[in-house]
Length: 277
Image (cartoon, rainbow, N blue to C red; front, side, top):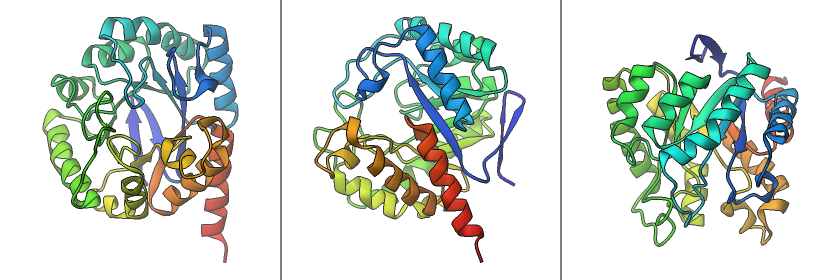
């Protein structure tokens, strides 16, 4: 049985789980998450929980290509109140803090979060991995080439799958040395990758299972989907569901999504298909 210890809450990752995205930013790439008031964010959280989310991922900084970085204090002002409010209103839900700042991670865990989701795998803050080790919470370690400001300028790989695996071998070792027991790996779709890189990585994602860590797939409404379909993020839900299903087939244990109901349905159908005789 594949499990994680989230601040004393044991989370079973078999079958796969849904992580609902709650962005508290004025510049999210998906307009459905822009400029929400706290009451609206709580309603969003409740809806995601009702539709089957096991984890809510709270982020206070846009990391879309070309986004401008804000400092840790500003990020904390955005995320801490909603983390505290969600923890108070929904005490059983697992809360993830989406940040690459160790200071934000530490304060968020103190405010009620249960795990850390870091797009930089510690590369943007050298204190992040040691801090998470001391916090004794699960850590989502994501692959990204470059930074959000530069990652899509001209990403290049010789063999993307092998390079991503090598990256995770080194990062998993660093995490283990820091005392992190529960490590989740995220291939980082859309982060320093061209369309062909994303689809190669999705097709070959099963290879990451050799690393013996749960795989998180963050495909929701991303450019690899809406650009392929010649549409916009707002019209990329059906494509997202298809991509999520492919991710499940290729070993994903957590789907990070804007649309929880549809992702949960994809998991349900996938599980029924696997159990049929």
